[in-house]
Image 1: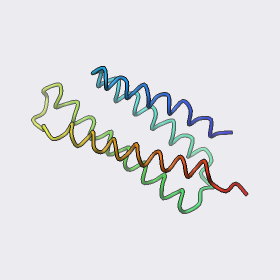
Image 2 (image 1 turned 60 degrees about the vertical axis):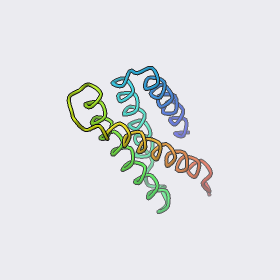
Image 3 (image 1 turned 120 degrees about the vertical axis):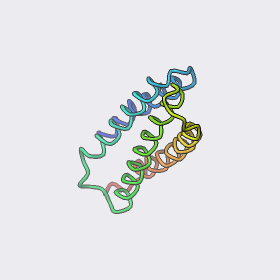
Length: 116
């Protein structure tokens, strides 16, 4: 039943990507952080049933999301001309794509797990 919490996280992530497309990068960051928070809150609510594979995947996703959010703050600083780091938006975009791919694999494997 707690898997229903993935639906608002997916909606928040979709809204975050729309905000980035519109150029509202602060809103994009806030919505992406909120989506990550909802996903990891869901996982932590019932963490005792995680197998070693699922635990490793969720920890890898946590690390990827945290790194992507950190790179996002650097990219935002560059976009607002507060930083000379021109590499930050490209690196944030690549890390975001990796995080999205890892999230898709992790959630698909989570939903297809054996529930015996």
